[in-house]
Image (cartoon, rainbow, N blue to C red):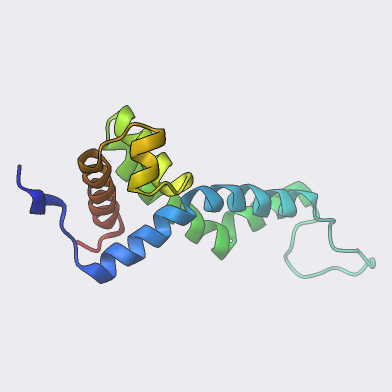
Amino acid sequence: MSKNKYKVPNWIKHTIKNELYQFWKNQELIEELRQDIIESSPEPADGQPKGNTTSNTVEQKTIKMLSSRRIIETERRITYIQEAMKRLSKEEQEIVKIIFKEKYNTTLAETQKYITKDTYYNVYNKIIYYTAQEFGYI
């Protein structure tokens, strides 16, 4: 296995790195957006019919949740990263969390988590490569 197996162009690497750093925040964002829709109050009724919209507030909220462009796009990005993560071993997945969620650099990972520099960069390059494949960049 050569070192260049997981090489991706720099512009893709930067894009994917940003997605990976945002992954955990995006998962929280999805829950917040859904909660906002659930907790939103129904539109006030003035007694006049409003076209073909339903008066069932649960149905309205479900439709809004399923059709929200922001939720759909964020879920798509989360799914791509989850699929890429599935291709890694459990140990590698933990290292990805250390790198991108806890934001450890190589020195911190070596001293506090006992992860070698080679392992750090191997997993780093692997997850970027796999995620880029999921996003369709390579």
